[in-house]
Length: 410
Image 1 (cartoon, rainbow, N blue to C red):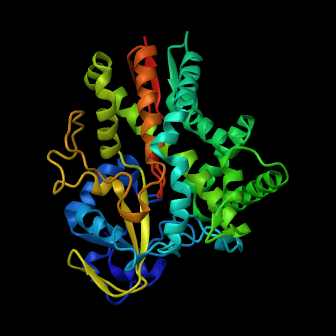
Image 2 (cartoon, rainbow, N blue to C red):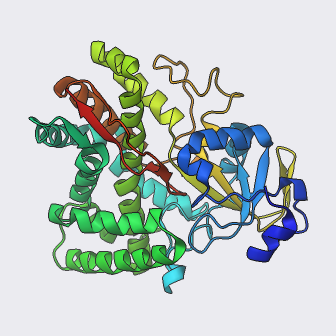
Image 3 (cartoon, helix red, strand yellow):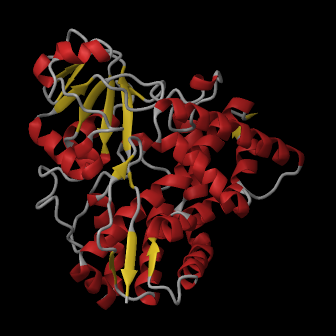
């Protein structure tokens, strides 16, 4: 740990209201312990106290701020949008000179509710059920391609093309653009700040072309949905359409891939648990819920609108707050044996998808994709294990993921 004076030489000054003992030199992007095991790192931060204050920004255009890891505190913050706003947390459009924001993520009530109500039906359980056949057929197609092989790199061969392929279809984007679009998405979510700006600009430019094409020739996809949206009885404006499309792209192309990277890594390194699921496929839905709990990938943020105390920590108006769901979902105050993966855990009221009005809009799709992935893998592929000598590390701040998961089988 560095003292306040040392940190102030290389970062923004620590605000006067932050106790020196709560300051910690923690940076999501390059913290060695976080890269080695982000969940153990969150556990250690939680054991240290209710929160830490880091002078390092978490995202592009961000500032230093508080990091909370206790579920009770995170729930309090996320369920109070008046005191803790989402607007202004991510300066996605601003960093390239635009006015749009991520919708509905970066809106506060009542505007948030208007767009959330508009978008909820496209991710409802009923709508996801209609996608089931296509989701399963793509999973089978990717697994069958590996027949005759004895190894693969899970992320490149399956965890990325599977959910990304589904979402590109939903957005109406061509499958042959998958490599380019994934590269842009990874630049935005998993690289240093200066590179993120280039990724944001590249995606903005790409989506602008696609939006204009849909205006001329509408199709049955999410981009056309955004263009045709009505808000308060008027058509969505250009910034609102871009904000919706940008958010749908980022949400659909990363979180499930990241989740699958940890799910497959866990099963590859815990053969007894893998064998348990193979012996009883009916355990898979509950197992997926538990693996999502223990490997929650999203860290979200808020900005305080007034002076307030949470968990005994004084937060001043304007302070930035980071909330790793991977910390909340493993809180021993919420779960017995929280770091253990217990497939039969019930109840399992985890926080991987967040709390309150901003709870993840795509949670139904994420669950179905992960369940189907395991059902088809454990039915069609032989038992697998992590490739000996594989060097595994985590990366990312807003969404954490493994860098690779090479597996082998007999």
